[in-house]
Length: 121
Image 1 (tube, helix red, strand yellow):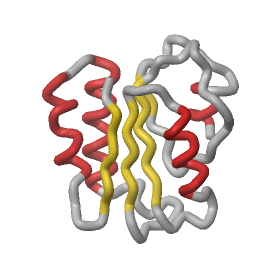
Image 2: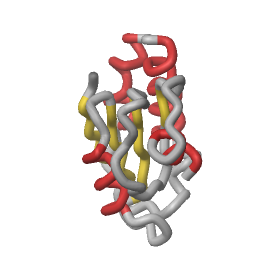
Image 3: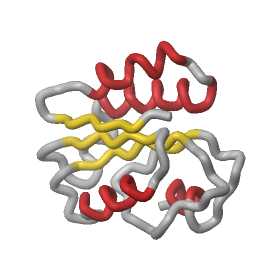
């Protein structure tokens, strides 16, 4: 929730990359923040519904991605190597402009139990 609040409720233009995990929709993102945003979510999350996270994703401008863990719940994917590798490369790209890290994102997230969607900027 803190990450989402910094993108929407209390925006800060200094935020250039963010990774809300198992999040909910909080309304339209602020135009003050032009961050690259990666959302990660378990498809069977009973705490924060994936439909709400999907709404948040739809509201974000380009420079976004959504990594879905099919069969996962609220937080059991947080330590998964795909979450870790994708998150590290997302931040390397978002904070440092590392194009090699950006090129690895799809492969970082890939497996038979994940779905990767992106709308790069």
